[in-house]
Length: 179
Length: 179
Image (cartoon, rainbow over all chains, first blue to last red; front, side, top):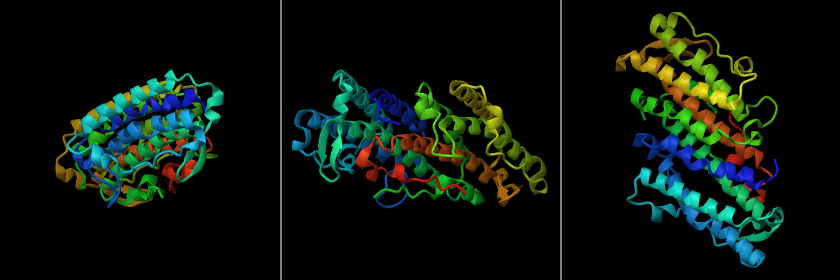
């Protein structure tokens, strides 16, 4: 499947409602627990997604559009939510995510980019040259990697409760594959 | 986290809306594509979940409650949706899932099971003895393993589009861990 702005936006605009439906009102035993030291709970994930909406996707797209490869992106702080989230409820973070995403998609659509624009190149501080298309596709795939993580993290809490069925549940054997 | 009926229902009652929010109206390029021969597309997953609502969870719970370990469960057909789904749109399958799940949770709640009931044992044809609590916990974890699969399957379609970012996206390196 090749990159398409429309197909990418179709995913991006659905993620806030999907995470809302999964998480709003769920007991803390599901949303505030993680998979071990240094891993994200579902609550952490929503804070992380909000941090990305503020500092990653649209700001990096702007850097590509304004500076191309001459100005590398700022480094992304994967734990930025530890500064943003304290004191906020999960419901507040979900509300923020909905609003931030809506505003960012409005910005993206407002640029009216033609297909050639997605070939424009920027400079990732670790990965090297990337295209604007790679960046926007990754925004959607990053949503999916965190839906994947939330479902895995929740399943992990029931690793004992399912008894022998753990053998048949792929999610129980996933380690996340993150570097 | 120990098994709790209330916590389990909290997950089970959210899954239809979560999959609705993720999938309804998405282009077929996301919903009708899979991860290779013999794997499920998101469309297949919803059909599979519906087949489970009809033939697996509540029917097996009834077998435990009525027969205990004396009558093993029927084997589950992981490809039962191939008989149920043809000709149906994804929207129809999502509608069915919402209704089937709602009715099944009404049945489960209607049994008014006391905590001791979840220790009652049944006989899985492959796994051997399992408890009713294991079965109900697995019903929720099975939802989560398929949310995990849907997000992975969708991400897989963008494995090239994300370019070098694939390195940072755990979901792109997940093989599903199924037996």
